[in-house]
Length: 393
Image (cartoon, rainbow, N blue to C red; front, top):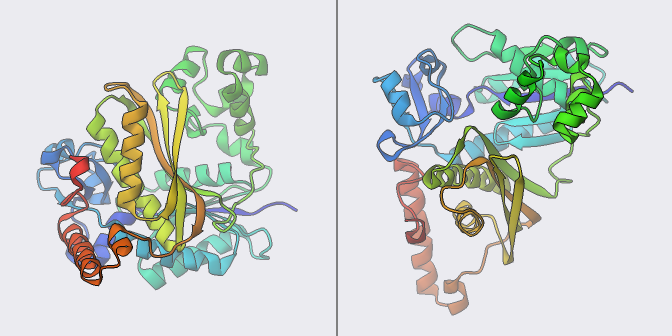
């Protein structure tokens, strides 16, 4: 049976949620992220802001220089997590075979549905927008690789200056033809450094990968070279893995340029821990193991983890452990190409015991609950970095 795989992606998700909460933001250049004076980074930006050249992962100070009128909003990961859970519920009403990739992105295997993939994509896009007011884009193909690239191509082709709401379908048997004219960095695993190395041997487009000899690619790039040839042919046999089957939840970032600044790495970990925590809460899960993934400038990768006596699901605790792992496994100033946080050993969440619980002191427990509510209120009003643990300073 020919597979039908959909890649679903919410358009500028954080911004779309903020526009629902604050309708006066529609059509206004604004960004969600850290404050420019504290070296914050753009997590997401409105399409009005993108006309000024502002992009995700850009320093917020640079974004404000490009657009002095830019409005800067702190991220509210708890709100985004709640909305994401509603979206994923809609996706699972179409098929139980949903693989959530991040807070705003998922794969769906709809092979068992009789409708055309294009029809299912249109219905799903309409349902999410009518039910939740959120715009989305979808790619459809016979596998995950091509479906994901189809979404990216579809969104890039829309030049309306608004949410793209794109749908791009790649018919069965046309995968290699669809990929051939694309730049080689459309393939997974090709970042700026690899792109330069490929260009040095005359490979600039996916069609160049197809034309290159397998021996050359293996000699020059090892396993990656063989993977690129398979990708260029549009081959990807990986199944859609449901959350229930998943053994871990993770989030990672590949930087445009290698990062040496520790504070930038810590900010990335903070955002990733918030996203992982939101997914854990959405699934009613906690994790026994927290892991940190680092890829150095020379492409070597290191993964370190810590297994805990009690499962955790709180984003602050995940962040604290990730930062400790970072400090223990990276020399100050060492350049990092990729950083990621993961949680594994998933188990149904339960209220965790604290020092107040162990003391069996009702008054102390009440104080702890009041403290937690106060912290939540401060972060909701002033942003996730408004109040931090002393150990983070």
